[in-house]
Image 1 (cartoon, protein in one colour):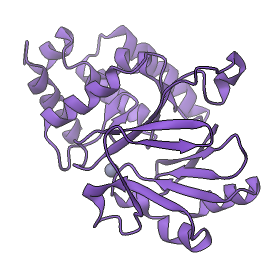
Image 2 (cartoon, protein in one colour):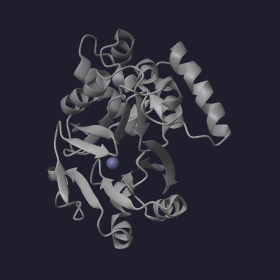
Image 3 (cartoon, helix red, strand yellow):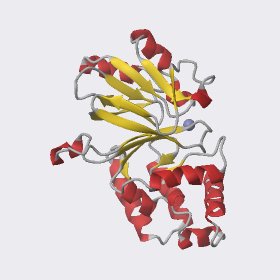
Image 4 (cartoon, protein in one colour):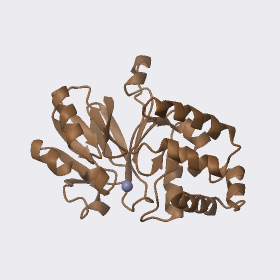
Length: 267
Ligand SMILES: [Zn+2]
């Protein structure tokens, strides 16, 4: 399986998963149809399925146009979103498996940004050759929608801080080398926020400098990697005494997270 990242709308990324069997492609969260139609045309591949992480318009806006061109494509998402994503044909829930050629993703329910939010996780392929590192297989790949961003996390539109911490903690349990394909290019502004909270944190400062350079070159900052996020993402550090102290909530992980999220909403 190959993974491609397409830019869409203001800051969205749409991900195209190309089966190694060469029989089709799956697209995750097509907020816009045009970039997907263009790429599938270049690849001369049909769209076999759309996978949705949640119901927000910038993740589902391309469905109707894509289905007009590929009427046989299945559309997967949470049953919570049945009404708000009218194009859904198949409901997914925690632990379900979805395949792309010979690779299988596991569905993770991760409420917080929205109540029905799901993520799709491909464990590393056991037989992956080292040269597949640039494609897919050597590492696990996580498609997390708007739950986790590099150096940030999604706004709590529907869920509670307790739910979101539990969801993000599921991600923290994945292997450290998991590649994380977030749905928005927010990394630089998230790091600006992080620097305002922990201005002396050497990991955050170093990574911000690196990301600023990459953005000046107009490079994407995704995928990111879980090991990096554990260092520089304050929204995964609710149990870190430094972050707890900055929030004035020692020994209280959930309130630390909630305050941090509240501060980010105002940033
Ligand atoms: Zn969203």
